[in-house]
Image (cartoon, rainbow, N blue to C red; front, side):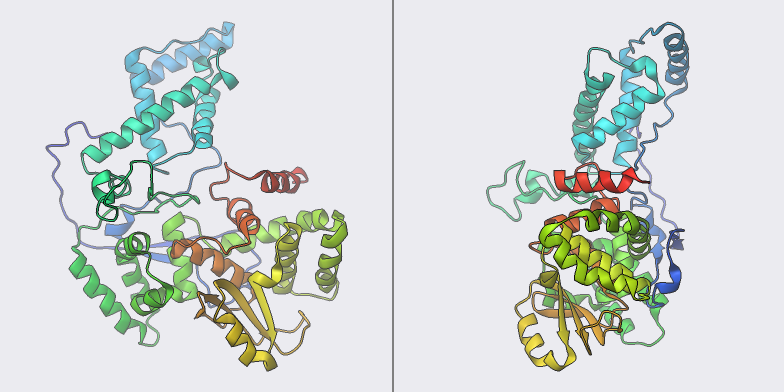
Length: 455
């Protein structure tokens, strides 16, 4: 932690380019179109400010000061010997909470109660001498301390103007949009596991970033220019993200101002910048991993679910390739969760194109599929995405890739999940993508438990 914030000297460095590559080892890469890529180019100026990891499944307790570590080592030895608990001094307590707050903030500014419980349990697991027998799970009081500490830590950072994601929620910032702002109302913060929901302000002024955005429009018209486009998209991320969060532009406006964001490669890249998780490779790998057990769970279900899924699942026994298997599993999952496949994946015969276009004009968010016939075994003629009646993407390689892109666009554009698919997208987010997995509805928690029982 910086002790004296009045004597900071900033030394600018030359801009460099960093290339991040993410590989999911469980993925059947043979079935992924070459149109997709989870290699993301970041400029050094932006990457230094962005979080690079999502909230971990197991929180790693950081190293404390030399003095604190020495006392903890001695305390743990005594606890192992005769269950003696250590009562930390105020100096030791301050050191522990300060280091933990810094570590927590490296993942998220606004941790949930479940997140703080994870940290408290990890602390008492690593250092059992800190367990408190008079509190729930012997760590509850540590959770309360962490909650208070994080609130104070955020206040401290805001007072020094060090974090845009905190400053945006001050009354001063809110007053620009609301003449009567309230502290707890309309806060702009991550709610779906975003690591970089509202990134730190760039050192560049808005005018120069706007010029770069205009330059990007020209670069997009050139052929074989993917690398330049990626670099410029990375450099303008903070500028673009704040526009999306602050101004909430409509889809037509976004298409005009940032058409590059509506390409598979850039949806993957933007999702990675926002969440620190690769989109397509993680989505497909997790879907393939869970499919065998998921199909067992779905096939056990009776009634209407069994009748509806039987029609879809029969294609799995007809030499279906990986794309068709994934499509069948996703459609069956939607039905299993009590939601309507036809409202999210709108399928038409190619001969119905005119009436389909008319219907899609009033669609809020969906995937559209044009086929020559009703068989899933034949490659669709076209697969695309419609948002607010506007076609934003087409010629997608598969229905599963299309669903992944819809999910990715919800993050990239800061949009709500499609109406009527609360449980489907919660399952995709928390089970498949493992984002903000600590908070699940009872239905999704039950499904998650069943999926993990056999693994």
